[in-house]
Length: 109
Length: 113
Image 1 (tube, helix red, strand yellow):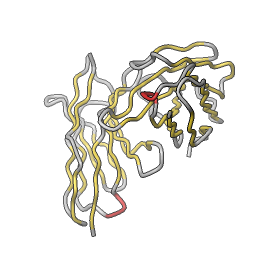
Image 2 (spheres, rainbow over the protein chains, first blue to last red):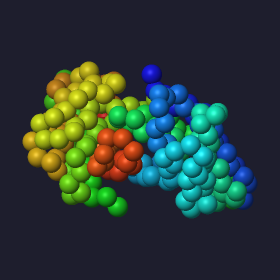
Image 3 (cartoon, one colour):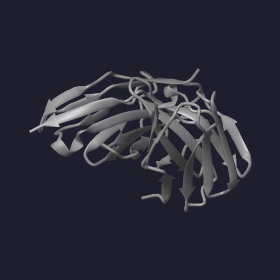
Image 4 (cartoon, rainbow over the protein chains, first blue to last red):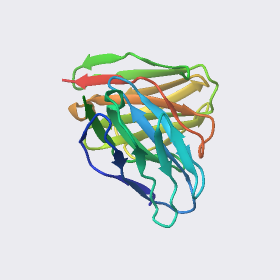
């Protein structure tokens, strides 16, 4: 069946470090791919999305490219801030949505 | 923020008691979902609705029932709460089943003692 695999956390980085959170998927067809972010005590918020192969989603300095050949949608940011500390979820938009298990990111000053 | 309100935000209840969680939306979205979030499991779908009185099961539906009598309200009921149902419950809405993002409420933290 359809599934999403994310790298396990937690990930701890110093401020201004480069971030990569790996996400790979298994799916029939070419579903939209999403990254969600969850800040402490809140629900999930959409961070970025890509709807077809080679699309790049971007928001708040984060980027992810829909790679059909490697079935991946890795999240990257060039310079993380303390305020980026959160849990990040990769998701596959099928009917209904399929989430990865989440990766906790902690950024220290 | 999408207009989604979950109530209550926190609840403590005893094993064997019935519990109902409410999700209210002001966006007139067709699809509504209930997820539970647990450490090591991420988010798991309990039930979802694709219209008034139209619902379907998710991957962890045992022990839960839902009702949707109005577009704006989606209720999750634990008929007889168990300690394994201690979790954070999230409601979400979307206007399409595929391709459109989900908008989430802020969650209900349920503790079953």
